Length: 433
Image (cartoon, rainbow, N blue to C red):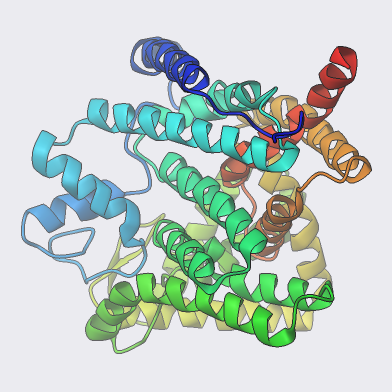
């Protein structure tokens, strides 16, 4: 017999949900396909909306033209961009041409799928459906979601995979079965093919589970389950790693850009006192990279993102950058401490311009405060937020030593939306009871 706290999902509930999601799709389509492009004409280049960004489309175009996985036809087979989003663009370009319209539609559909996952996550946390759809709406109509839906970038796809992974993580933690951990690892691998940041999560999970081990969990069972997750993730990543080895001689499961990311962060920290805007410091850091590459005798093109004529040169130069950054941090540890504090701030609030930074701050601070209240209330009522908060903590920790930027926290919005609605849910529940 079902208790009052258990979720009753009826055919009527599913029908109502389908109708609501359809209405959301219609409304979001009008905003993304018409309203935002009109507004961007009034203030262009504010949030990189309504365009292709990060040069993934260059690689997709070259693949279709038979030039291989490279940004420029005469450039090297690159390891700088992961293949997950590139392959999506390849499929779209092949069937529909270089259509930003189709990409926007895909973004909207993936956002709706993410919204449904949010509903499932909310039910996992509260064991009730009241407030679940509102949690989805927080994500679906968040201005960051709307803007990301207008452009050809990784955010929407990556956010979908992250939300799906956390949902599978709930099942894996609940059942403690190797097969569920394998499924979760496969989804984690797909996420890591879009962005590298989730790749260390199995190690973080393993350490936390050992530290907080319950009596029924043995070290062997934790090792087997997390090992299965890690195996599945590496299995998904293995074609990319093998390809990288064939073109460069290095077995790389991620990308070659770690050195560039570290150098850019260090440059910004060292030059904050100049008072220059964030994005101007990013441009100056890229200029320094180009100067160093020239001094080291590397053959390349471009300025902001260097494109090499040899895959081995691309890897060698990023290793050179990593070495320089490590040496400087060891000589001046205070710089590394500064980078952690600033990256944490930038991760949540920093935008491309001063205006976008202010808007990010206005939107994000209430979200974080309400999510914090949701965490406190979850502890009070013993709600199941462990998998969700564990991933949030990991995701923030893995960014702060490397680089912070406001758009980087976007994949956490579905999880924060669930936490935001927890206080409201219990307030409503108390009123009804």
